[in-house]
Length: 132
Image (cartoon, rainbow, N blue to C red; front, top):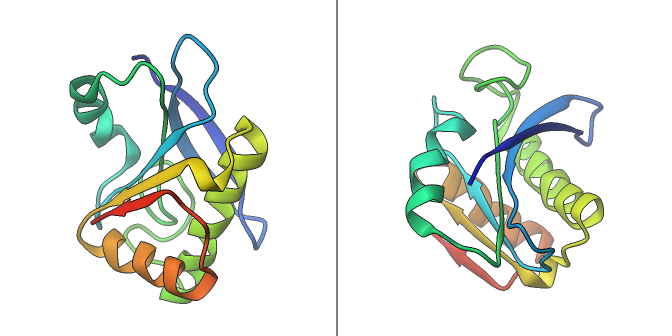
């Protein structure tokens, strides 16, 4: 699948970058991918291709300070700020792409797994599943 590039406005007004891989037919299911430290959303392309999901929309962000998102390279002000970014991203996918949070699976590895786990703990979003 070919990626499209977009941005969303996070909780503090920062414009964060993300990629989406959308199936040819509309869907109400999503897989959200969260990269490890010092990576970016483009690194997920090979995995997206290998998954070959034709009925799931896939989204991956560039965390604050990574890839094409603003901020000092490789850093964020605090873990709490990044957790709020995760929540803002999930809400953007839901609102902007019409996918209920209940139909989202989140996949995160390394440092992103810590961040996403904290988001699930702190916000208790009704996601379908979490893969760490």
